[in-house]
Length: 400
Ligand code: HSE
Image 1: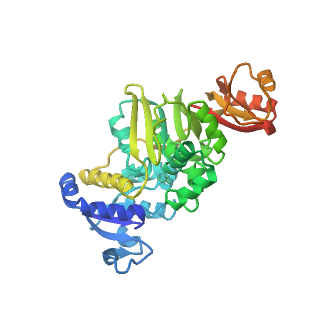
Image 2: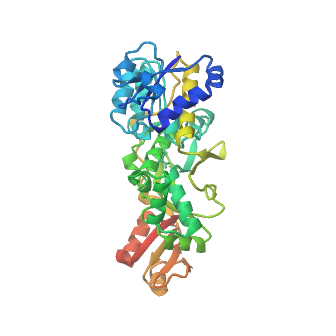
């Protein structure tokens, strides 16, 4: 079977590398040899053997009758969407690592694939090398998934781990993460939670079988987390981590991306550095957790190659996947309840005058008071912080 790769960047070149290094095992498992015959990229790669199979027009792949499977590792919604759609309409199977494309156009591309009796797969779009998508679609398909909570962004988990272990400030850790190549030059998508938001929208769409718009997911990043917050977390015996979470409520889900304070008993507490993990609670499974390399060239490419082999085994068949285009209205996030850790410049008397029950936290930081509230809805908390005066709030972090 012949494979084309669109986008010869980090992941695309990783896919080519795996298909070369593991050629024999992959051939055995797929039932026949898989050859990369075309690579689409704007660049020429002169002097590199790949230059012999570089093409610059996606139609050279879409209209090539000898190509069965197309890998999309370009990133971004356009032109990836136009190219992928054309591939599916031309009867080619597609696998992608592109979470922006899947979050935005997943339901539509799944339908187009179904109409053309091919497959659109996207294992690498969430959790890098962790096989979470196929796990949800196949292994746990007999369950109603009642909760899915993940650390699905390696960059921010690395940064939170560094801040926790070294007491460093956010900006210093970000600079170091950029120097090490973990954080992008423009880190916005990671540190503002946009990347995690797309990933939880994809996972929630899969567990409910409907389109979940990532724009509907309340999203906070980690930019508001300071070394002082980490000191308070240590005083509480907790760690701050960016979580992406969905919890079933009635026929819908509460969805959220935000930094949370995790206690040591939390299943995600020990997930550190660039690692990712996804905790799942199914009504039959109970608890399950999937842990591993959530980003990087070969782990992500490994997931893409897993899709290629799955496609090769189902080359004449569309594997049904439930993700309908009809949008799911998410449950009102203001009705969700948490305990909150709050830092304020008000004194203890003022706080106890507003909140009936609090636990004070002493991290040895002068001029402010830290406390944990009772369980409150987001709406109730908003009313109470209004009573405190928003200008008196230094920070607020939810407990998990
Ligand atoms: N920027 C992402 C991360 C890459 O840090 O996890 C994988 O999606």
